[in-house]
Image 1 (cartoon, rainbow, N blue to C red):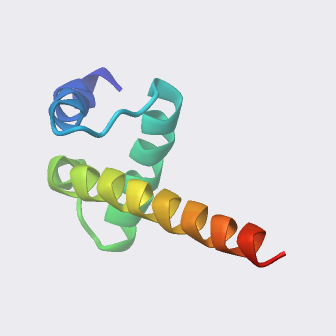
Image 2 (cartoon, rainbow, N blue to C red; image 1 turned 180 degrees about the vertical axis):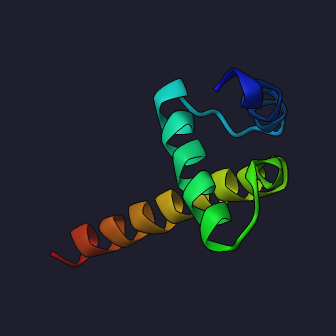
Length: 73
């Protein structure tokens, strides 16, 4: 994870606060996604910021959907 610490720090400066455990999981996900695309690990510096942003977007969508479901009961 230390290899990607600078990416995490930049994301936190941009407002994306993420735990080390979550970030580690997202690194592993990014590695799998890069491998499927036929890219090597150097590609992660480009892919990882988008993966983190996508993670926050999915969390927001899920929370909104859960809130809407709760309101309809």
